[in-house]
Image (cartoon, rainbow, N blue to C red; front, side, top):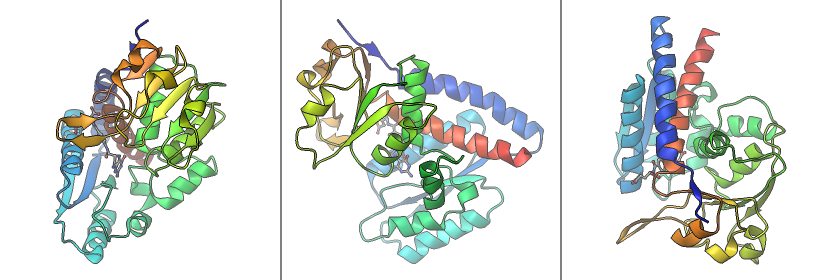
Length: 283
Ligand SMILES: Nc1nc2c(c(=O)[nH]1)N[C@@H](CN(C=O)c1ccc(C(=O)N[C@@H](CCC(=O)O)C(=O)O)cc1)CN2
């Protein structure tokens, strides 16, 4: 048996083509969506992701606004960039690329984002709305994972899902999304303190691995036919390494590749969030 590939790259391309038409309709009504990014420091991954986000904007017809700050930028300078984007009418939504360099207070910065311009769903009051099951922009990676599973008809209702990783951009919000009534999955959130990870993953219909540990999920840890999504990114001397061993495809029913799986979906969902926020302006 060989797993079906959950092709995030192709799916993201199709989503962006749909969005291009929605953006054209918005522009025809006088609403010009503009995505702002705040990028601090020299991390090559963060630079590559932000550049990709602006390439997506150009493809879809969204204006780009960049605030690139040096690695020595102070907390006050970062907060000033956020205040500028809050006040800029051309910026209809924006993100602060994470992680910030060591010593900066990420949660404080996220707390200063105007909730109405939060394109990432990571502003604390929007995350709170997710907990309260109220409408809010959704964090991009969890939203991308759910969208990818839906587009490939991987059943979520009643599914046992094991999420590996408890970070704020993936693991925690993904658990909240998947347990909404609309998804109705049962979620086990595993992390570095989990005693026997394999014992959990072996019973899962869907495994989402975002721990940042290369090759963490091996084929003996996967139930035959399960869906396995690789969200882990580790930069090694040999290039990018995911959390899922390649031979998992021999056992799994569905596998998202890495690269080319959840990463492009994360970017596509950012574009969706920006377009939806602009559409809300029309009422
Ligand atoms: N403010 C945010 N910061 C971060 C988020 C986020 O959602 N909001 N998520 C991650 C990084 N991320 C988005 O910013 C992201 C990760 C991966 C990709 C992607 O397209 N990856 C490609 C490979 C790219 C490469 O070669 O480097 C793939 O998987 O095919 C896009 C966005 C942490 N920070």
